[in-house]
Length: 167
Image (cartoon, rainbow, N blue to C red; front, side):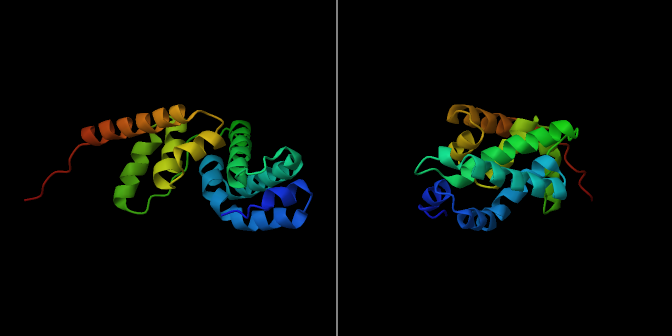
């Protein structure tokens, strides 16, 4: 949760506020960026770039702006630029069980936008509103993307072959 005075302090040029925001938001941004960049060093650099951009754009911040969403948007932009420049394909997910590996395999077959939005919404718990703000898209579009991913996964689960029963 961000301190409501953070925006005001940033707008006034308080670098200490930026440092505190970095410490409190780095861990929340890391999994999102890593899924896109698939490289730890690049992930750290992308996050630093998002904070540099926040600092550069501090005068444009709205009084009640949710800074994490602004950072998420910047990080997404930089991560996509990194992916393009470095020919990164696929989106990283981290299954925790054999069933998780099955789901990760099914997710990897989805188009990248559906895969990423599904992970952020269903797995990480970001709301449709948060995703629409971060991706500069409409809430309806985000709902369509999540819905499309869920329909595709349902179809995949229905068509997965059952394992033979041992007797």
